[in-house]
Image (cartoon, rainbow, N blue to C red):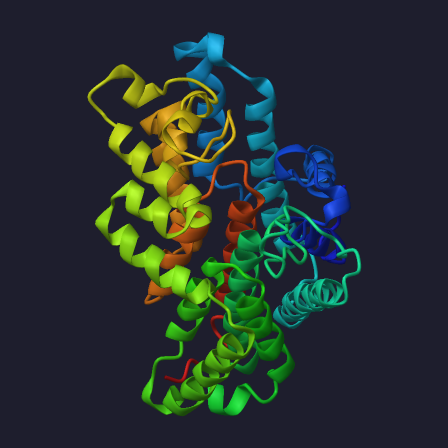
Length: 401
C-alpha cells in the first residue's frame, strides 16, 4: 500500500508525461508513447491505494456511460481500443488527484516543475532554430513543413500544441507564484525575479511560428490589466512587436484574420484565414449544428468513432478518418448524457471564483480538444493542482488587490 506523505515523484512524472511529447516517442496519430506507458501504470497504482475518498463522482459516472451507452445503443460500433484509451486518461486523473493528497507536493516544488518545463520548451526551440539557421538536421523534429522552416514544434508534437501547452504552463506558473508570495502577481515587482521565465515564455510564443501562440500570449497579458501594470505591459508588448518586426513574423496577422473570420461562423472564411487553425474551429461548428436533443441518437449517440467516418468529407485538407469537434464529439458519439457528465466534471475542475480566464482556458484547451488528447488532460490536472493548493493554503494566503 502507498503510505501517506510519499515523495511526489509520480506526480512530477505524470505532469512531464502530459506536457512533453518528444519526437522519438511520438507514435501514430501523434500519440505519446511515454504517456501511454505512464498511464498504463495507473491501474497498478490504484490497487495500492488504501481507500478512495476523493474520486470525482462525475468522472466515474462518465466512464461508466461511455462503456454502457454504446453497448446498449450502438453495439456494432463499440471499439474497445478507443474507449479503454479514454478510460486510461480518466484513471490517470484519479491517480493524480489521490497522489496530491498522499504526497509531499508543495506549491514551491510545483512552481519549479512549471518553470523547468517552460525553460525546456525554450531551450529545445532555440536549438531547433539554430539547426535551421545553420542547415543542420533539426533536433527533435516532428510534423515539419519545409515551406515554413521556422514553424517548429519544440517539445510537443507540433507548433500549435507547443503554443497551447506553454500558454497554460505560464498561466499556472503565475497563479502558483501568487500562492507562494501570498499576493497578486505584480509585474513591476515580480517580473525582474522571473525575468528568465518571462523571456523564455515570450521568445517561445513569438518565434515558434504558430498563430495560436499570439492568442494565448494575449490571454496571459489580460490577467494583468490593472492601472499599476500598464507601464510593464506596454514594455512587454513593445518587446513582442520588436521581435515580430525583427524576424518578419506573419503569424500575428493570421491570428487576427482567424479571429475575425471565426466571428462570422462562416467555415469557408475560417479555412481561408488559416487552414491550420480552422482544423480545430470548423469541426466544432459543424458538430454544433448536428447536436440535437430531438432524437434517440442525440441522447445516446451515433456510436464510437462516428465523427471520423464523415468529418474528412466536409473539412477540406484533412486525412481520411480525421476526427475533431472538441467535446461536442462526445455528444455526437456517446450522446448528450455522457457529454453533460464530462462538461460538469471538467468545468467544475477548472472554474474558479472571479476567475474569468479559467473559462477561456477551459473552452480553448478542453472544449476544443478531443477526449483522447493529452493537452485536455494536462489542463485538467494543472487546474486540479491549482485548486488543491488554493484550498489547502486558503487560510494563510493574503490576496492583495
